Image (cartoon, rainbow, N blue to C red; front, side):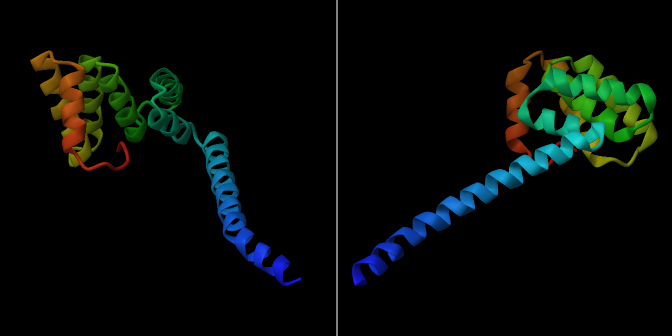
Length: 140
């Protein structure tokens, strides 16, 4: 009987870790399902975070067809175009957002990055350097 108790105590940390891993996975799946069930903007943000640039771009384009002045969607689409190295389109999108919200520091930062990348012609090298120097937060 005493041996049984000792074996149970040895298994307890393993069971706790297993339970936490299952909980973490279920939270991740739940958040992903909520994003897909939610707004197209959330879906596009999730796809952008995963690096699915084409999927994010198409979701944002469909959103902008119904609401062409959605500043968040325009900003995210500009970020997608920047990561696709389509700097002229990114610049045009960022300038459009600045017409809607001239005080947006985030959009000014992205516009400056797109202009620098376009003028230097370095493409992905300058994009990588720019991303590594900025604090890692949400894309907006």
